[in-house]
Amino acid sequence: MIRLIDWLAHLLYEPALLGRGSARVPNWRRPLHSIHLIPSGWLARACAAYDRRHSD
Image (tube, rainbow, N blue to C red; front, side, top):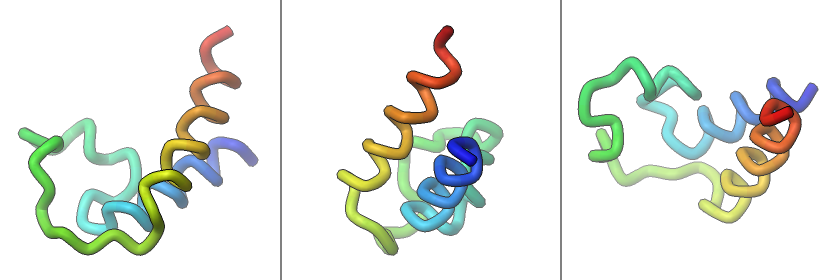
């Protein structure tokens, strides 16, 4: 469930990168567009939960 939430948060934050597919895109830190469907704080919370779960 946490993986799904993380993927959905990434998808909504940067729809052009298709979720965590951004790792496969060259220069992924340079945004493809400036449209974000959720605030960056929501993305940070989802990532933190995912990272805590998978860091063990």
